[in-house]
Length: 127
Image 1: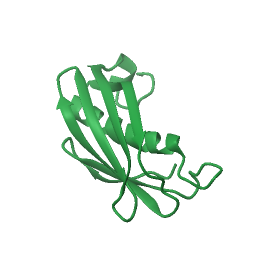
Image 2: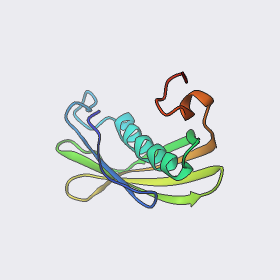
Image 3: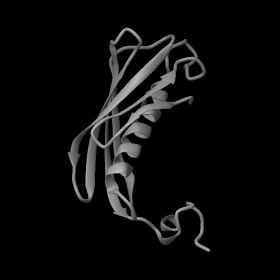
């Protein structure tokens, strides 16, 4: 997908993605690519908020497409709507290079204790 994170905090996570390589057959950025960008930003922000020993897992994502990007990059800006102990909600606004809104995504993540193998630090089985 070519996603590049350019800012990464609990309060604001920003990333960009090229249109090239992510187009549908008629030349527009694929709607699913917008969702991949939004879910990546929202899930990473939720996991940062969750903190050590906890993980965030997506339970809902939706997108409203309002414009089609055809070239260059799109940029997603993710901001929290709700940061709770067990639930987060983020809004991701995706714009084209002219600053025009192309898509608005909302993602809800459930925060829970990480499985034992994830707590080992490597993401693989604990030794």
